Length: 434
Ligand code: URA
Image (cartoon, rainbow, N blue to C red; front, top):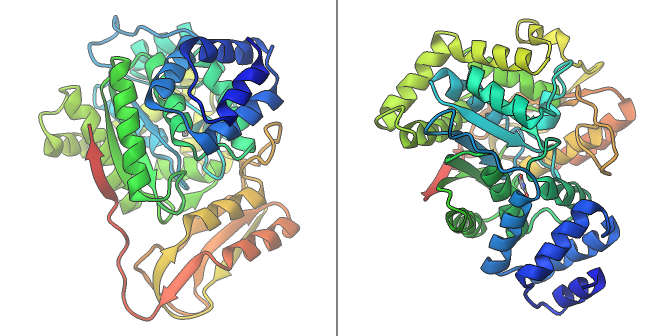
């Protein structure tokens, strides 16, 4: 079998056999198939798709390309959560310690930024010393000892997805449903969880833009997971405006800590509770949604969720003093307000434009070898539905370079829609599947 024949086959829009996909994934993992051939194939998959059978096989091969963890000796229910990616989406940073504080065992494998969306691993690495590259033994031990771990795929888990993911990020191959499904579900299968909630983002700042596409992706992931003996629930949530106020790596750590201190913005808190309630009820920690939300509120109020985050940071060699003193996190040297040009009500904050402005400031990668600037980003001062006066601050730009501020400001010109009549934000949750 030759790599070029696999590429030609996808070019003709034909479906791959299991043997072909095995050859392909093995070649990518052992380096015998180079990045440029993978790039060509990824683009052909974006254009010509993959059927359900191919997607399920690719998912299985991704999962099997590394160790598949067995955490059944730790607890009957091992929880996990994954998002399809959004702007200002820092829920994992909050939910993982919160679930552990509620008595759950949660084992989370995360990724770096993908396309315009941020990645939990990049955010965590803005904490000085934080080790995201846990070995499998360390990952397991930590879940056993403190109830939670947050690691990247540098461990031997879903190794093939890591290779594909890095290239997809920089080659325009992100918004492809079968590739998203195999990427996410393989990591969920590999990390050994059996109670899984997926936050499927939908809207301007999401990888998938329409409700119809989000439903299609959700159904695909639920079915692929079923085929691999995993039960998952997909929560479709709005990503029309950024989640919370802070966008950017260290800025999102700060806002997550604020939520754990009981001072989080409503949309971020509500979605965290919605996803947490699925995990707590499915693992029988809480009897119903109301009891689950009450338990989460309690664990935030009594400080145990925040203490769990501290424990997680310490266990992974991070400097936990950033929880008490945000100046210990990377700081931008320039803070520049961006103001409204006219008065009215904020109808839209386009999450994509905000994300692209952050990327221009240096918060994300253009090439896979790029270094990111952990300190830069945007702090929104207003959310959709709020009244605004001309000249009032819409956001702060946090930057380290004047020339990048000019680029970001240019991008932000189209990010806000201000209207005369009062408006309301989109509902946060559209649908729950599975
Ligand atoms: N998150 C992932 O892990 N993979 C994707 O493809 C998209 C979001």
